[in-house]
Structure formats: C-alpha cells, structure tokens
Image 1 (tube, one colour):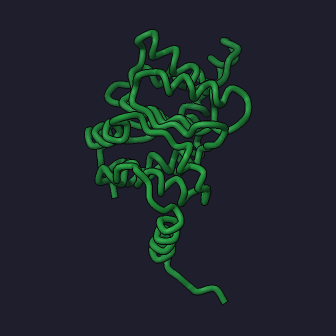
Image 2: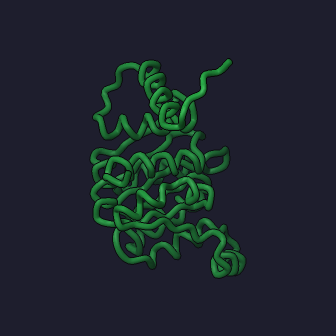
Image 3: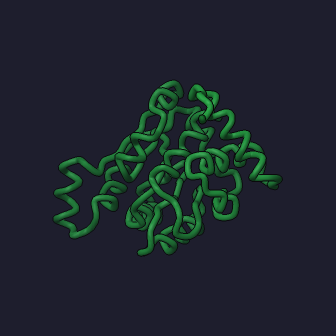
Length: 208
C-alpha cells in the first residue's frame, strides 16, 4: 500500500530523491534551484545538460522580480502555472494576451500567429518585464525582431518552446541576443517548464 503523505511532504521527499539522483553539478545555487524545479516538474534529468543560463541571467530575473516586474507568457497554460500569490507579494503580475480579441484580429490581418502579435502587445507594457515562452517559436522570433528594433528590452527571457518546427532555431536567436536568458536547448520545453522556471525565480526572490 502506498504511503499517505501530505503535499508538502511529497514535495520535500521528491526534491530529496531528485537531488540524490542529480548528483554533483558545477552550477551556482541560484541556477541549481531553477534546474531542480524544472526536473521536479518534468521528471526529466536531461535538463541537467540542456538548460542553459546566460551569465547573470538568474540574478537579472531575481532583481527584476524584486522590483515588481511583470511576466508575459505565450500560453494561458503557462500563465495558470505561475504562482500568482507569490508574484503579487513581489508587486508583479502575469499576462497572457493570446485569447484577446485584438490579438486574434491583428493576427488575421497580418497573416501571422497570435503568439507573434502578443509580443508586439507586450512591447507596449511599462515597467520591467520577464518574457516566458513555453510553446510558440514565433513568439521568440517576433521578440528577437522587436528587440533589434529597440521596441522592447526584457530584463530576462525564458525560452522553452517545445516541438519540431523552428524550435531550435528560435532558441538560437535568444542565445545570441545579448539579453539575460534561460534557454531549454534543443526540442524540449513546454508551458510547464516555462512556468516552473518562473516559479523557481519567484520563490527565490521572496514570493513564497
């Protein structure tokens, strides 16, 4: 018979198991905490090798969150997974524009994706911003263009779209963009991964 455990006991035991299986890494503690949260969410230890942190990327995210930065995601699933109470304690909020009627209309008129147009809408937000992409490569492609045009400058980019078409290529754009970033290299990722990274940062910033 499986042992009955409370949620906090399950989480504590899960992290103890994954820490033991993960073994030694050269990551600093703040990056290791993010990696462990991703592995806890996915049960996938390959993230030990393909989760990339730009120098100072995690610290840039923590500083932004402590200053009340907003988070923009490319899916409502990622938005749902982000800790709203924790983010609110830091003075921030999370946005996803994918279901907005103006986004749908603009995407039809421009013959592009809602994710791409969502990044254009995000460029009009004021204050510091963290962009967390867990599904749409077109969001990253549009974000790269907007950054080059000087229309948006996120404090941190979380690039974790999943799939086969333009996924690797879009992540390569972010790896070379010069903005602090956390990238799930290769084809792996997902809205749950993007949300897990956000939450790891929120919790470290004091939003828990």
